Image 1: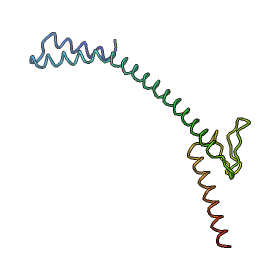
Image 2: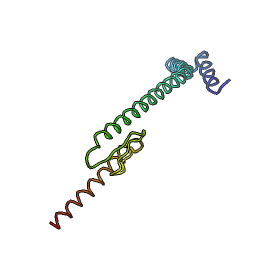
Image 3: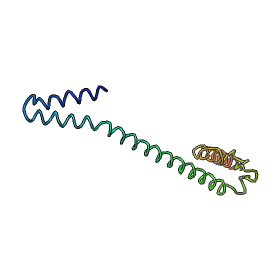
Image 4: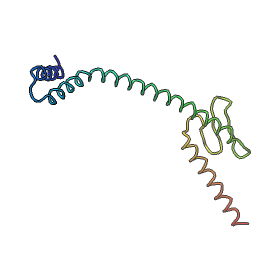
Length: 131
């Protein structure tokens, strides 16, 4: 017999004997009923936690698909006369700025592109000074 069941049995005993006022007896009966229902709640909580985990897993998979699609879109949009991208061997990389659209996160891609663009801008500003 579990500790919880022992408590419930003591409460039921107090209710049967009628210890205390009627209000107290009704309260103790309700407490006993609530305690008996706890294992059912535990099962329901386990079921809900499993559903939440399934939902989180599905969201994670969808997020991965979205991120892959975004990186592929960025790869195609990145190609121009200044950036030589290649993807014929399954890779998605830029030789010019070092972006790896297959492996880098979107934040790393943003950082690499921004750093490259800032460096190019600085070169242009320096070239203007000499003109």
